[in-house]
Structures are given as structure tokens and as C-alpha cells.
Image (cartoon, rainbow, N blue to C red):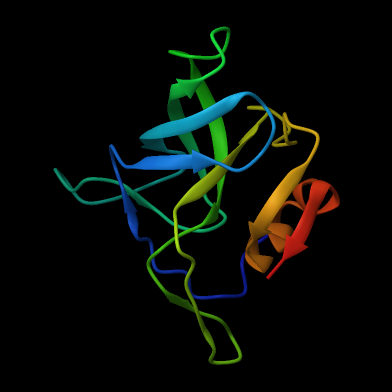
Length: 133
């Protein structure tokens, strides 16, 4: 896992609902924790593009619903700035499910757009993505 070159504003708070962008069987995820987050006392954790998060599956196939899974955020509504000065924002918040130990994707394809910062940090996600913006 490498560092991200962009200055990503963390715009997704705890208890936020995210769309699942891969074909792993989950449809909607709820953020319950941010991996590696170190914050101030009583401040709710926030996550941004490229962060590893722990989620609960709220909607999807019966065998994966109501389980706790690891995911990587691939899109966020809150705009963030890249190193070249451009600002990027998407129309929804989305994540894909990953393996907890190796951070490799559980699904086999991503048909929607994902951010370039995710591919910088996790190259295995870039291999299954169709559009990288």
C-alpha cells in the first residue's frame, strides 16, 4: 500500500451509506470504522478516496448481507484536490470489497468509474477496473 499523491479531503463520516461498485454481491454498505484512523477524543472518524474501511453490508445477496467486511473507497461526493491543482468530485460515494489481509478485490470486475488515487495505492484494483478517472 503506497501513499496517495493527492490531498484527499475526507468527506465520508461514520454511519454513511456507500454504493458497492463491484460484482461481489453487495449493493449497499454502511461505514462502521476507518482502518488506521487516529483522531481526537470523541471526534467521529472520516474516510476519503483510497482509504481502507470496515463496513456492514446492508443490501445485497442473502449470503453476504449482515456481515462485516473490509472495503476501499473508490468515489466520493466531496471534492478533493490533486497535485496538479485540479479538483475532482463524483456524483456518489462508492466502495469495493477487499480481502482483509492482502487488500485484493473480492469481485472480478468494476464497470463504473473509479478514482486514479485508488489505482496508485492498490494496483490490483486497477487491473479489474474498466474506467479510471
